[in-house]
Image (cartoon, rainbow, N blue to C red; front, top):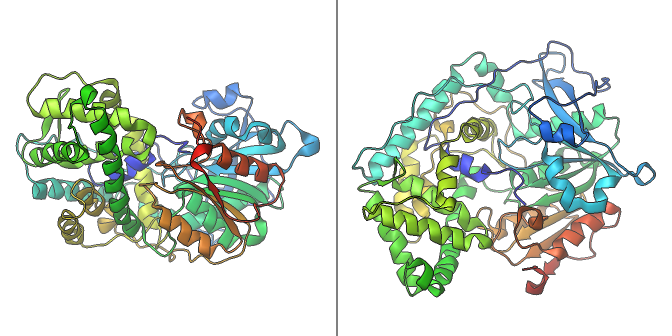
Length: 515
């Protein structure tokens, strides 16, 4: 379940577009105290839905640097929706919607419909990770106006533009305020420490947790660092802990191409509606011609020029969910017509993506993702090559086997190549027997299934629930309007309700996906 919109979109655009977070860092000046008294009250005016739901908000003070607990501190924004069944209260349930860079203060509201009666047994705790949202947000200098692609281009020119944007993002973050002191402390391991500080501030002996995508990997990191503090841990759509984030990104190329094959077969069966080709091969050829043309002349539509990297990014978003096949076909139809010089008014699917690409909210998330990708010393978010040409070489090599998505997943250069500060810690090595319930979609093209299986082997106390669907996120899909997987939803809710882990791994049969 992707509870935070456009998380993967924000990661993909870090190297394509410049961005800025408008808030400024405001670390607290008081000493961090793990037995601090929390001042609960109404949430900020921006959190209208939380206030309407009767939630309370507070701030937890934590060290900026856990190696110096008496030094500078920052404040974490947390929210709480109290358990409705005090006699059956299990404890607290934290959650994280993914990213890195996703805020989660209101994430509990998105979880409640999927949790059903289980929500009544927990204090549902949302939080914004450090430097994001309302948790001592970190700012970068404002970006200048985006540079519009010219009427002609090339793959190399597009790549060089992404390098310039990545370099500029790094400069704006490094040189703004006192960011050189703050940036090294933006890491997954510190967010896990912050989670444990929240647990302690709430007076709880253990915490339960649900995380999806990057949030799932964050949960695994917590089990490694705080195994005795883990209660009911549910992680959805995980990655291989032996890989760097750049390696994980590259590995998504093959499943993305397979998903495109799957979609192309669907589009061919609906040729009468979309006119993209009568066979899967013809549909793929239509997409390839679109991209090849855009590498010479960006596609003009709705007052914008879309070069091939942006087109690949646009294609990547809907293909993650099999329910989006009609939307993807409509998007490709609009783009093909625009590339042919026809006057096109974008349909709702493409119009929504174009609006998202230019929204200030999305721009905020670029830097949020970058600070953790560049602050992590390895898995789950770090490990980016320093040499820009490494991205270019991998992009070129990928074209033979992965012509549509290979250039994107290999060539997406992060600002980390120019960051200027080094991670304080290495990535996290996973290997423990903490009980964990894992969920993974077999045809996930964002975090490949094999990566989740690799983490499952490292988490020797885990059970894996597999759903044979093309999706990113398995739990609570019906809440987002997708086909639910009742088998997976039952497994999660039964576990959180107070039951044990399944006796063995579970594969949800095709008939278990409600259509």
